[in-house]
Amino acid sequence: MRAAFTPIVVVLAFMFLFPAVLVAGIVDDSGNWIHRLGRLWARIIIRTSGVKIEVQGHGHIPKGKPVIFACNHASQIDIPIVHEALPVQFRFVVKKELFKIPLFGFALDHAGYIPIDRSGGKAALRSVQEAAERLKKGTPIVIFPEGTRSPDGRLMPFKVGGILIAIKAGCPIVPVAISGSHKVLPKGSIMVRQGRIKVTFGLPVQTVGTKGPIPKDIVTKEVWDSISAMLEEKP
Image (cartoon, rainbow, N blue to C red; front, side, top):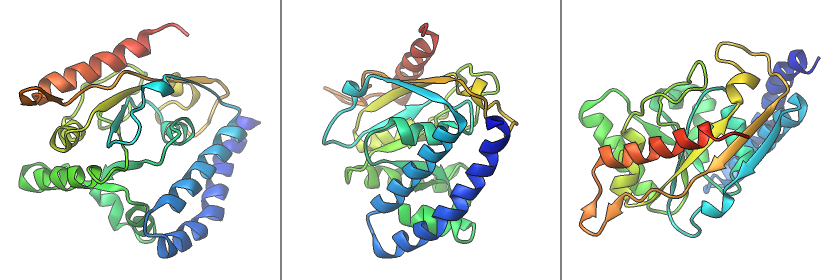
C-alpha cells in the first residue's frame, strides 16, 4: 500500500507546497525559505514511504566556511534524503536547462540553486567560475559528481565540473555516501519500497595545499575513494 501511495503523495505535496515556494521566492531573496519548504516536502515523502534513515559523521561537516558536499547518486529519492540528512542550509548544482522550465525555473533561481553548463568549452568553464564565486559567499553546495544515477548502486566515474568548483573556490569537499537508496527506489521505477538508507559524511578532502591548488585528478580520486570505502562498509 505504501509503495502505491507514495508517488501520489509526492505529486500532491509538490502541488500543495509550490504556491508557497513562489511566494517565498518573491519575498525572500536569500532562498532560505524555499530551502525550508524543500525540507518539508522531503520529510513528507520520507514519512509517507516508511523509509528509515541512519546518519553518521555529522561531526565531519566544517562549520562557518564554504564547503561542497559530494554525494553518490543511485536513486531519485537521494534528493529528499539529502534534504533530510544534511542539517544546514545548502544549494544544489543543477543543469542550466532546468532553469528554462516555466515557474519551476523561477523557483530554482530564487532558491539560489546554481546552474551548470555541461556542454563543454568556454561556456562550461564560465559557469564553473560563476559557481565558485557564489560558493565563496558561504552557502554550502551539494553535487552529484557521477552526473547521473547509478543503476545498481555501484559508484561510477566522476565528472570533474563540481570538483573544479571547489578547487577554484579553495574550499574543502565533504564526501557523502548514500547506501541503500537504489533498493528503496530503483532507477526507472516510481514505486518506493520500505527500507533503510544510511548516509555517511566522510572526512573533508582539501583542495588547496601548501603550494596552492591541488590538481583536480588527485582531488577527484580522493573523494571517489572515500565515498567508495564508505559504501563498502557493512551496516
